[in-house]
Length: 599
Image 1 (tube, helix red, strand yellow):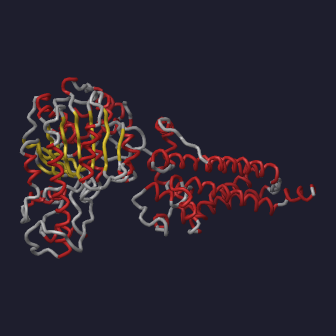
Image 2 (spheres, one colour):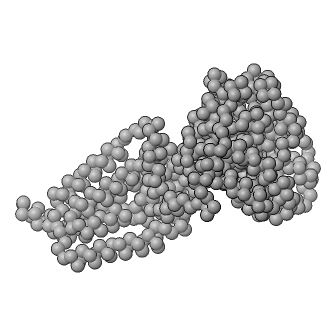
Image 3 (tube, one colour):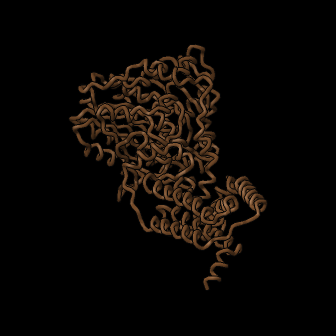
C-alpha cells in the first residue's frame, strides 16, 4: 500500500491533475469570497454561466502551472498563487462589506490610507474566511506530502513555462480585457450596470480584477500638465493665510442640490396652467439668487456636487482622503452630515462622501420607510437639523432624487401647460410629467424654508440645481419647442448649461452676519459656489478659496468639459494672457491641493 502511494505521489499525470484541481479549488474559494455581501445566492448564480466559472478558475490554475514548471516543486507552485489569490479575495470581501466599493489594483498604491480608513471599522470574520484559511492550509499540506513529481528536463520546463505565458497573454488580450464581453449582460446581471460593486461581483473576483488592471494602471500613473510645478504650487498656496471663522460669525449651513431642477419660465415660451414656479420666484425676492453654469447636461450630477464641495475646477477621482471645504469646516468645529434620497452605491457616494470628510451620511437604506420623493426628503433633512448637537455649528449637504429622468412619455395625469402646440404626444407627456414633479418640489422648498424662518439659531440655506433635465430622446422636447441648445451660440450655451441657485438666510443669520442676503448674485461655475456663501458670511476661508475669488473676479465661468470660459462677461474659448496666467496659477494650486492632503 505504501509503495502504491509512493508511486502515485510521483506519477506525472496524478501531479498534473491534482495541481489543476487545486487551482480550480482556489478559484472557487475566490468566487465564494468574491460574492461578498451578495452571499450564496450570487455564488450559486455563477454556476449558471460556465464562462464566468472558467474565467475565474483559469488564473490560479495557469499561475500554478507556471511556477510548477519554473520551480519544479508542486508545493511552491500551489502555495504562492493560492496565498495571493485568497488574500486578494479577502480584501475584496472586506472592502465591499466595509465601504461598498470593489477592490482593484490601484488600491494597492494607497494601502496606507486604506488602512487608516478601515481601522475605523470592525472587520467581522465569518465562516467563509475560516473556510478559505482552512482550504489554504489543507492545500499546502496536500501539495507538500502528496505531490512529489519533479519535471526533470530543463528544456521541457522552459518550453512549458513559456507556453503558459503565451496562453495567458493571449487570454488577457483576447478575453480578459474585452470590454464588450465584460459588459455583456448575464441573466443575473441585468440591471446592475449602474451598481458598480454589484456589477463587479456579478463577474466573480479574479475575472473583474484582471479586467480592471489596465484602468488601474492609468489611475496609478499620475500625469501632470507640462506647466505644473509642485514646488511652485506649494509656494503659491503658502502665500495665502488660511483664515479661521470667527466664533461670533459661525452659522449653520444647509445645502440642498435638486435633481434636474430648471426654471423653464426663463425660456419665455411656455403658457402655464398655473404659476408652478411662484414659490421659487418669491424666495428669490428675499435671497441672493442667480444661475450656475454647470459642466453637464441631463446627467452627471456629481460634477456640480463635488466641485461645490472641493472647489476644484476639474472633476477627479477620489480614492484617498481629499482636501475639501467639508474638512475645512470641520477644522473650524463644524459637524458635517447629509442625506441623499437614493441608494448608497450610486456614484460610490457611500465611500467618497467619507473620503471628502463627512462625519455621517444617510441614504435610503438607512430609513425603514424612506422614499425617493421630496415628500420624504425635505422632512428628513429638517429632522437631521433638529436632531443635531446644537453645541456645534452644523453643515449639511443633501441631494434629492425626485425629478430624475426619464419621465413617462405615454400618459400624463394633469396638464401644466395650456397648449400642446406643435409638440408630439410623447414630448407633451414628458414635459408635463417633469413639470408635475417640479411643481411639487417648489411647494416642498417653500415649506422647508418657512419652517426655518423663526428658528432661534442662525441658519443659511443654499438650494441649487445639478443640471438641466433630460426631455426626450435626442432632446425632442427642446427641439420641438425651438429652444436653442446649440452650445456654440451664447444663447444656446446658457440654455444648455445654466440652472438656478438661491442663498437664503433666516433673521437670526442676518443679524449674526450683518447681511440682508438679497439681490442678484450673478452667473458663475459650481467651483465658486462655496466661496460665494463664505463671502456672504464675511468669511475668508482657506488659501485656495481666496485664490479662487481672485480668479472669479476676471473669469467666473469655467466649463472645463466643453472648453468654454467667460472672461469679463464675455464667453470665449481662449483666455487673454493675463487671465490665462491667473487660471493656470489656480489650476496648479488645485492639483497640488488635490495630491497633498492637509487635514
